Image (cartoon, rainbow, N blue to C red; front, side, top):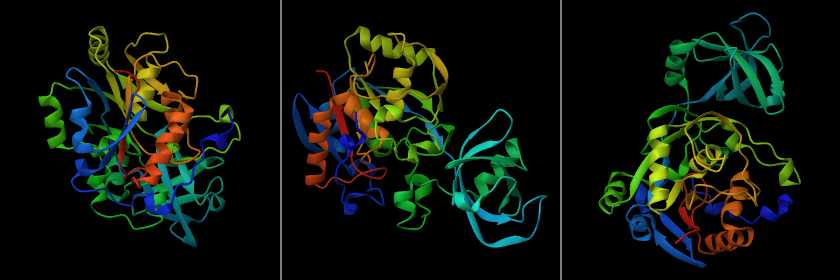
Amino acid sequence: MELNYFDYELPERLIAQNPVNPRSSSRLLVSHMNRIVDAGFKDLPSFLKEGDLLVVNNTKVFPALLVGHKMKSGPISTVMVPGARISLNLDSQNRDGTWSCLGKPMKKLRIDDVVRFGMNIEGKIVHIDGRWCKVAFNLQGEDFFREVQAIGHTPLPGYIITKRPELPADQTDYQSYFARQTGAVAAPTASLHFDEKIVSKLLQKGIKFVELTLHVGAGTFLPMTSERISDHKIHGEWGSITQSAVDEILTAKLKNKRVIAVGTTSLRLIETAARSGRIEAWEGMTDLYITPGFAFNVADGLLTNFHLPKSSLLVLVAAFVGGEKMKEIYHHAVNNEYRFLSYGDSSLLLNST
């Protein structure tokens, strides 16, 4: 399929720059039984049934955006190159101790360049591949993470951070209610609508929750550039689903209850763990790329925000609901001025009764 099939006009005014308060006061589009219903996220319990199982991603965002200045090339130096302001979005640590990062601006970086962040962290560029670079930092382990926690910035998407400065509230706003396992450099944004009140209402109705972990990587920000979607490559992300979580999912299936993935990250991981046809405990790197024609073995529903045109996440939505249904949903969302992207509104996509 051509990438242009997944294009639509997204007015800039619909890109949410801040979340609503409280979280559960966001809007909710529900697509079910060939109908589209406009509702509020607080109404989510009324669209779910007793015994439905919500699969949530418990990854926790850390301040993975480092902003510093390039130093003179070669040995560690104390003289900054004027104007060479560099940002690195940490993605994942490699076996050799280096970090894979998205760098900006990459045209300013060369192999062996040294970039200083704050007083204590310096990183040497050891490899460059397009938008990506590998960086060897002077600190490792707990020392590294302690400094990153102190000087790092919330890794907000470019469509937010280029329009406004980072705010103190982003440290909590860009963190899921379910966040427990540190490791993500981007939030699983479908979970940002949940708060204690809505979770309590869902539990009271008999809706259940099960957790997994998928550390969302910096690659989630990257646009698709190939003309054909089959040529696109998904950047790998580390995930884990335990046997106890698998048992809860299998029990729900056995009882003919719906399994609803909260977010594309949860969906990708449960389907990764079910490539054999039956979900199993799983841990490792997943680069599962879900496109139209994909056979879903686990998910009966998907709770997700509204995604960018020509993005792999929009391709996933089309795979789940069908291409024409995806177009109908997004046409409706734009015309009814839903708020889009990370801090935007939510949609509940149900493929079963």
